Length: 121
Ligand code: HEC
Image 1 (cartoon, rainbow, N blue to C red):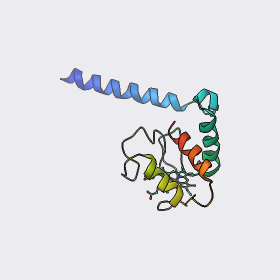
Image 2: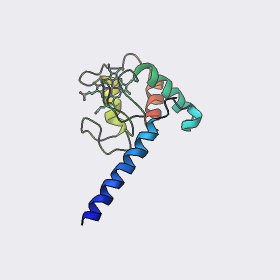
Image 3: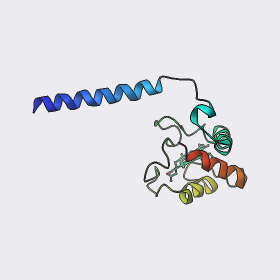
């Protein structure tokens, strides 16, 4: 029984080490390194201009807003709503809590590029 517990501790520390070393590279990856197509790359620029001041895309730590890492890979959004286009678009266009709305700032094309990028996170 003791062996099992030690094994578990070892596994947890190994996982921690791996995740920590993943964050060690401070240089942001290029669009090519991330495998982004043209639309996703354009969405990334919009994200950097309008969203990155409050949201991290590649780290799970929260900022002013919650981390958006793996946004669509999870079943639920940070608010608990289902993680799908409809609710994410609603937040972008209408704002949410302390988050400003971008419906009047971004064009439909920009929002659709942004959404394509968010799907890569
Ligand atoms: C001024 C800071 C700020 C900016 C800029 C900002 N957000 Fe947010 N965002 C927040 C905060 C705060 C929340 C949490 C809102 C809440 O649930 O009360 C949030 C929540 C979210 C959520 C989660 C919604 C949910 O249902 O859980 C998404 C998705 C999101 N933001 C996307 C974006 C995108 C995309 C942009 C850029 C167009 C952006 N945000 C710009 C502050 C910001």
